[in-house]
Amino acid sequence: MLLPLALAACAVAPASTPPAAQLAGVQSPSAACIVHVYRNQTSYHSLNPEKPFLYVGEERAGTLGVGQTQCLRLAPGKYLLSIRQPVLFMPGITSDRLEIEVQQGTPLYVRYAKEFRAVTGTGQMSSNSRLQLASEEEWRLRK
Figure 1 (cartoon, rainbow, N blue to C red):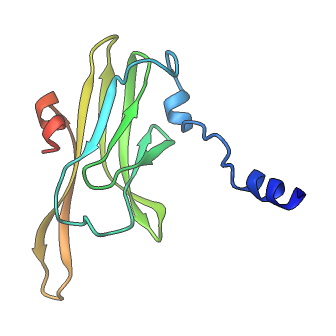
Figure 2: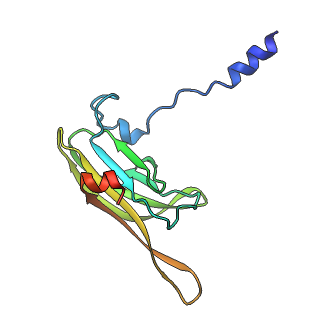
């Protein structure tokens, strides 16, 4: 009789807490999303299980898979966003940075794109990685 109860208790996942980057300067957990960081919808790297890491300052805010968005609820101020490429599913080198200024009530849209550039003489593929401001329309279309 106690075994099903014990097994059921093990199946309950603990409530997750938002990353520290989302907590730093947060107005409230239920506040509207003020910074939308998204990765464009592309076929290049879409099957790669490793996802680039998004950082706000030195705090990890999450990962960005193809077509995904991270919502950052940040208080007004200046922030440095960066992307670190994964190496064996761990954050590696920083591939790009962008300084943003968050203003009260003004949403920002930031696009991360990793795009195919060329195949080298050794047969390796090379790519460009960019973090830049985008429009709301580009965010909606994931372009």
